[in-house]
Image 1 (spheres, rainbow, N blue to C red):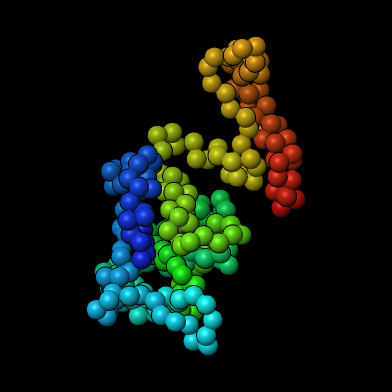
Image 2: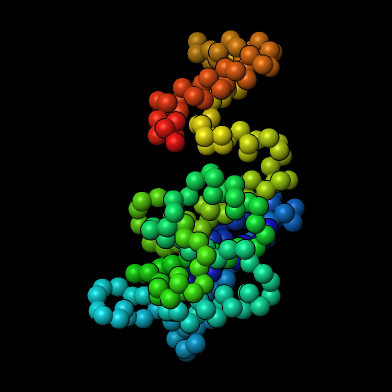
Length: 225
């Protein structure tokens, strides 16, 4: 799967994609993440990518031309399944969306900045708008990194244990059950006896019960859905 991320701050995205699971996915050739500097597509000497908003008001608006040139250049090289704009007023990212997008081939992600981007970019080029929560950040770079991480870990072959992603919280509509590792007794705090029983079916049933209880206690809205 290929991700092309368009941003005015490409250096901000170097670290998130250079470590851990995302790095391994790229090394294996399972995921390709390419970051493009929007300023490379500016048509003026100052390499600016923003301007004052029509109708007045505070802040600057990201111009349509640099985004259009970059998107069109990418589309001339390959077909894209989605052009995603990271924005607080988009659909809130959840596991269902991540699962769906993990089956795509090529995706473009637009990172906004300043007051926002020219609405015509959203109207003409964007196929999906995604938010990572009801709050505003300085730009779309961190949300883009969150989105890519949520998607890439689901692609077959990325995780060492193929079943790991399938048992994560939110898969199956529940939070994950509590997990434990050695030692079984730490300063008098012992793990549940069932986990030492070796009875796979009873352990599976226990984990499901714990997942339901944790979801009921922490996220009852998920059970209503």
